[in-house]
Length: 410
Image 1: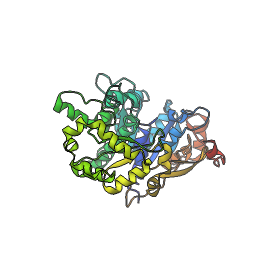
Image 2: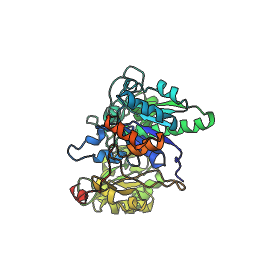
Image 3: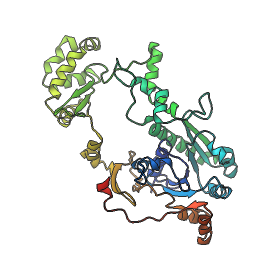
Image 4: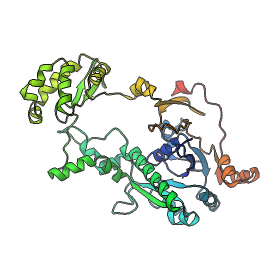
């Protein structure tokens, strides 16, 4: 039985910060209905002009159903409110005030369903000096402190690779929804769950903030090195991602590293015995280790060090990840058939639950499930549905057979 089989969600999210939240809940079994504007849908669908739904959209909307509805009309709004008592959660990440423009703000939804859990994701929250400012992932990462930690010591701040401002926020939003859902089982009352992208990023770098409290100074950019020999090292054959990150965190691991790279005598070298001395000799330590890693591929180096007990990770690029035998063995690489784009691979659910298995399904076409959802939730007849389509209140789309050439085109 899927863990969240009983949870029903009206998902008004777009792009990534909200969609990653609802996808994670869908991967745990929640019934997620993605409510999209008729004819347009989630703007994330259109990041690859001329190619139909983008891979960006497909990556964050698996396991959902799409209901295309015109919430700008009184009739569309009425349909939404009629469905509301049958659902547990509403999630949105529109700009501040958008739900109120639809006359679907929290006060309205709560009046129609006091048990509703209303989750709102905003760049800077719903109050405070910057609440009305628009935000994207990297804006949140800059203002949340992540840029300041990223880069070389003598260089400018750099954009981090992971979308912590978006997906990091989405994961925390999902956690907040689960907390409210559990509390509602005890109180029978819904509540508002709010999360700010800036605050989510700040939470993810809170170790750096504690450093500020201790030293009185901001955390400096350190590049890849912290305390030698913790650093990034080049590997054979010298490609752009032929590197390994090695991180011995205590004396035992350090001694193991020296043995693993065939330099056991360095364990007794006074120059490297204390953190202070290693900081003073960081460059020469780096060259000692690099001389060993340059003779091996990143996989060979990782296997040798990992087997010896030294924490080390090869730098995998996107292609490496999709073909990695460990990721494959753990069923993290999922292949799905999409009606328009054919078979494609992507990273699947990261949460493994022994007694809750949910098969991964493709992201929906815009309006793919409009008729199905309205028939199930409101028992509308075919005649009523046809009338809604004719009046431009809902959109519906049938699924065709996937293009056989899609995988090669992509």
